[in-house]
Image (cartoon, rainbow, N blue to C red; front, side, top):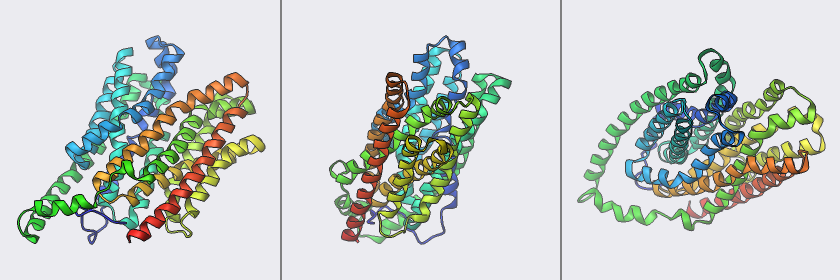
Length: 418
């Protein structure tokens, strides 16, 4: 992998403070979105929302992810990567406070602010990993990042409702802002160290060349590529769309599916469906173990096969639903790592990484926003879950094909530029 001239030296110790910071930030990149789902009934009742409005409140952040990527790219260019992470956390904190205001306008306004703020975090974290983590550890750090997002989702899904019974839904969703404050403190410490190190590095670089730092700028620009014209961008965007469509569609409707198909109570169905989120932690942490597997397509092919096992298993052997949901959960956690770590690996500089991360995620989240309503419409029209699962099966097969092709192509590009 080729890296730009601004990439920090890799000879030092592993950046543990950065890893802790990324992990804490990741907890806050999904948790605030999931927090309202367990108490949506309380929110509906208190604010007088219709079922449609309540559904929009839960799906709006995913649409904000897609629409907010241009804002994310602009923020990164304006502030730099480290400060963009801080902006993301501050925005999510502000949105959480607004959302707990107790009015319909506050609920929607806060949700939009949270969605746009998290869109910045989604785009910038791969940029930070690409630049500041040793290449051989990048997929491991990406796995920790993905695992902590799932841990944040799982914690808020399990604990928000019990908290709401004690302190009310407004304070329950506001209480998760404590994690944002902790993440901001740790990231602030990292940002301070980074500012000091960057100042020293710039001074050393000026002394190392004749003239000023501007003397090396033409060379730096020459190594940069436009992600818009890179076929890998669109291949990964399509793969991320298949991943995100499957994830958000299944997250929304797995509890209803297992309740309808197997006669489970709502509580039991919710517990079974939570396996999908819990298993993702193992998938996110396990995927890096296959990062050096050969041939290069082995890792994405295995993850794709696990993804396919969920809809296919529910269609042909539904009695094993617990196994299929668990395997699918492993796949969705690992699938995110496969795609994001590919972006990290193949981009050459911050500009390209920002562009590719934004474009890949924008395309994915546009399709993801359509997942829950499309699966619901198919279920309503057919009165069964077979048609929705066939659509998910098509999406997961697409994921397998697209990520496998991307792995083979990126392997060729790496050898060509090595």
